[in-house]
Amino acid sequence: MKNETKVRRKKKAQDRLNGLFYNNQFVLVLSIVIAFVLWIVLAFNDTDHHPKNISDVPISVQLSDEAQKQGLTVYSPTKTDTVSVSITGNTLVVNQIRSSDIEVAPVSVSQITAPGDYKVALVGKNISALSNFDFYEISPSEWTIHVDRALKKSFPIKLPANMDKIDTSGYYSPGPTADAESVTISGPESEVNKIDHVSIDYSAGDTALTETKTVQAPLLLYDASGNVITPSKYVTMSISQVNVTIQVQPKKTVKVRPTFTGQPTGLQFDQDDAFTVTPDTIEIAGPKDTLSKISEVSLEAIDFSQINTTHNSFTQQISQLPAGCTNLSSGTTAQVTLKNMSQYTSKQFTVTAFTKMNVPDNMTATMVTKSLTVSVVGKESDIATLTDSNITAAVDLSNVQEAGTTNAPVSIKIGGNKTCWAYGTYQASVTLTQN
Image (cartoon, rainbow, N blue to C red):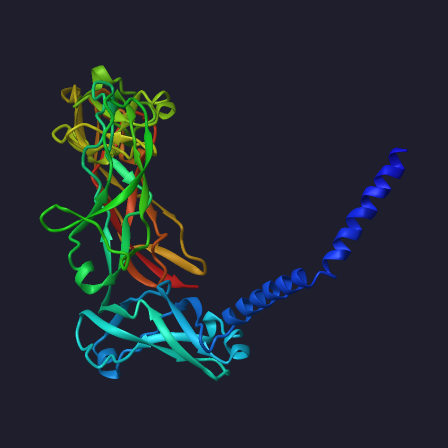
């Protein structure tokens, strides 16, 4: 029963709808509505009377040859500046036109002869292969062209001398460093020339630092009066921010210890008894792990050949510290004074025994010098055991490459005693002949 009722209702609805199309008044009204809709559609597609609007049309500015010779550059409009253009004409043609088919340009650029702003009227240009359309309206119809000479300058990035506070009781900071030392700024000459220096935008924290801190800081431009400059959109910067590191290192006091070369093997020095060092300590800063391995720093070596009973005080440079460490003391040298030199004496010996070292290949070395007078320093009891025969002069020919007679450096060897040393520097004359 229910299905039969639904079928009857559906048949009645279809009969009513079919009946409408046999109703003259309904057909008349329907025809008028359809005709009106078609008229509206055709009217809005009538591009002869209803212009088509095209957006994002680029503005092209070509300066005169004279302006280009003066180095003028167009900064406005930029490549991203566009206008809206309305066109009319043949509907089939107009509907094919896109923003890439047209451009807008100044009516004239003859007045642009120097840096400045120039208000110009705009005109449309057809750059497509199509025709049969006209420019109806350009919005905006005028544009202010900004021209200037282009300038590019590099500025060092000046970091504040003091940024965050440092706990100086136990820590040291060599100052902030950035991951870039300079920034290149390009743009209109009149704007770039206003820039005096470049720094960073940074606010210090409230607490003193006890460890290294790295922050990202925007760059700020300043004029000569110290005022911040807000660059225009025509100014470009190679970087706009830097990573700034405020290095913080622990401090430590270490002993200063002298070193020696040419020291007799049997002569041992105890710092407290044998010499004094002034200053005997310095303060250094460095990475925590490095400092934990350091208890002293060395001085440049003192050559024993320069020590005798009257010449026993030396000012020596502090040797290079480990990587990453800094000497925080006021000086870079220390004075070393050998004590108890009154226990030593000197005596002259005549050396006649020569040995020749590093003789060049295919050459023969003949001594011209037959004897040398050498001053030997040591305790009196030790020197008393020496004779001329205990002393040998070793001639080093490593820096001699050509035949002939030349002077070569000599090192003095003292045999039979391990606590005495030769004072002074010596040379001997040697003749080299080709084999």
